[in-house]
Amino acid sequence: MTLDVIVAARRRTRRRLTAAVLIGVGVLAACVYPAGLYVNTQRDDAVSSSPTASVPAPLTSPAPASGWVLPADVGWVRVAGVDLPVSAATGPAETVGGLARGFARAPAGAVVAALHLLVRTTPQVGPAVFDPTLEAQVVGAHAAQMRRAVTADYTEAAARTGVAYGQPLGDLSATVAGVRVDAYTDGQASLSVLTSAVDATGVTRFAATPVSLVWVGGDWRLVAPPDGRWDAQVRIVAPSLAGGYPPLRAG
Image (cartoon, rainbow, N blue to C red; front, side, top):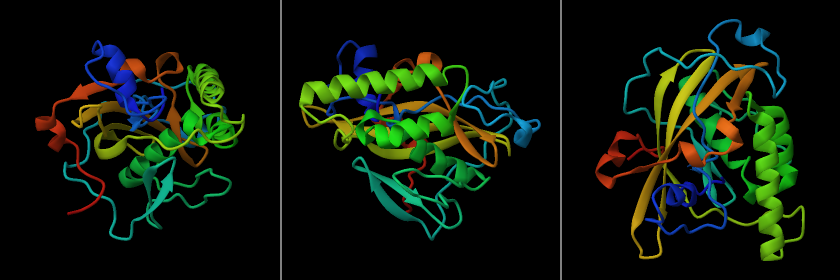
C-alpha cells in the first residue's frame, strides 16, 4: 500500500509481476497511495476540515479535454525517489518539514496535489511526514483506517530492514508515467494515476490507480481509499493503453 503500485497489483494478478519496491502503493500511486475520487460539489468551503469529514457521491461531470499537461513554469522536487511537480501556478505554495500545502483550485492544481499527497502518505517518507499529512490532508470514512495501515506497514518494514524508527525507509522504485483527469469541478476531482516500474525480468510494467480529491478548508484533500488501502484499487495497464494517460512532462 505504498507508492509501488506494482506490488499491490502483483497480489491481484497471481504474482504476474515482480515488485521492485519493499512496500507497494498504488498511485504514484506506484506513486501512489492513489485513491478513487469521491467529492462534494456543494458548499465546498463549509465542509468540516476534519479528516473524518463525510465524502459525497462520485463525480459525474465531464473531464477536461485530453492531452492536459502541466504549466510551462513547472519544476521538480524529489521525494522518496519520485519527481513531484511544483509550480507557482499550481502549488504547492508551502513546503515545510516535508509537507506540502496550498494547491491551486484548478485541474492542474488537483493533479499536483494528488501526486504530492499520495507520495507523502507512503511508509517510505517516514512518520515525520506521513503522520501530519494523513492527519490534516486525508479525509473520508476510511481516513482513520488509512492512518493505521500506513503506520503498520512502516513499523513492519522498518523492523525487517533494520531502519531506526522515525527514519525514512528509502526510495520508491515506481515512476509516475502519466495522469488522466477523469472529472473535475471546483469542489472535487477524479483522476487516474499511471505508474511504471521495471520487474525482475527487466520489463516495464504499468498500473493505474483511481484517485479522489475534495476541496476542503481552502485546499485539496486526498480521499482515503476503501479500507484505507490502495491494493484493491490498482489495475494493470497494457503498454498499448498507456498512451491514454497524458505524461506530466511535455515533449
